[in-house]
Image (cartoon, rainbow, N blue to C red; front, top):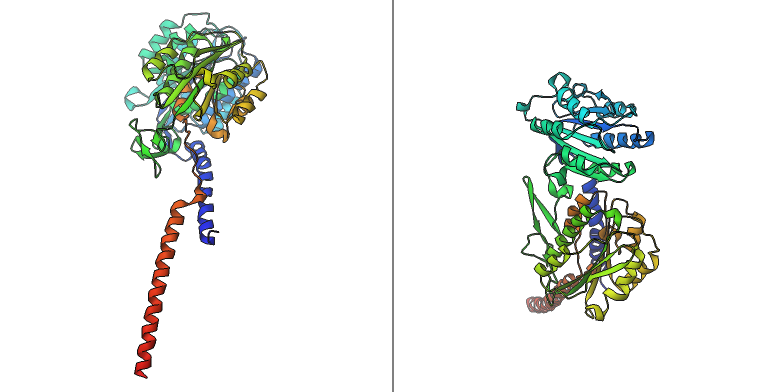
Length: 494
């Protein structure tokens, strides 16, 4: 039985480990509030479509989105100024840049905006923003002051006028344009309006109920980060060390930083069988499916793909399940990534339960290349609600000892993702509203098959204690010897 002080040390170690994940989550959430992310001086104008196709309840959701973006900004006359342009068949300047006020006052003004409920003259609205909203008379600052000029356009339909030329003039005038499309929006229109690179300046959500989930992206778009580690905007596997405007990675004791400068190794020789289970339903869309393939290859880049290292298999599903390639077919990253790029999009339905069952019953069997005694990892991606029951297959996967990661985008049901993910769920479950944000998920998703260390084994402490006890015993014997000699001398003196 360990002494009391040893038990206390063990409990402290356990508490530190349990608190570690929670602390990081709190740091990420509090980064902006703590001043770690300072919004750079910006003249920001929202250009909001309130045509008749936008229902009153949907327009309310747009206003909530605007309010939440504003909440993350440093709203002051010498920092960020905010304006709002409302448009349909005509244009209305709802909030002027010169009316910069407190966040509370801005939010209240946004809440009072009413939809115009007529046509969709998006080009006219951009022209108004260029000529009026971004004018010095309306509070815009001159370009020489180093102030960014940004327009965020939110629309859900095809414009009734031309946007290409007027958007080009706005961009040439130094206005950075973000284009958000909702529902049946024309994607080509978004691309005609948005600044380059398009993948960073265009966003699509299937319904207004999802637009609020883009809030974080736009808060970060105006953010000059002073501590990337505290905001979680890094891909260090274990320890992030802040440097001015950047960061560097390190590892816990007993681990070594790998050549990629990001990941750590304690059992780098451990073999792993990894199977991706990918949703190829029609709701994903062809252009987003290409982003999914890039995301898979981002994760592959972090694996030690080799004959005795990581083996990767790929399964795609929609209304049916199709094995793209089994475990062990490719033993190098180059061939593996090429095979992922060649995967054809299936379209049709979303039978996630059937796909999970296929993974359990087929993908991780010896006949399909799985290796006995090797750690098994399943990575499931989906963008919508499953059309069949997932519970039994999800439970069986975990009962079989598979480490399960669940990744959802857009309309994915978060309760289903949690049901698929292994414990602790916070480490194995990821969600984003936008396919373009999957890059960040790839950075955060760390496949770790090393056995968890039990801090209460406290091997090093026990060894130290044993050395101390041996030294004390030796010292006690010497003291006894010295005591006897002193006693003998005292007798002689007497």
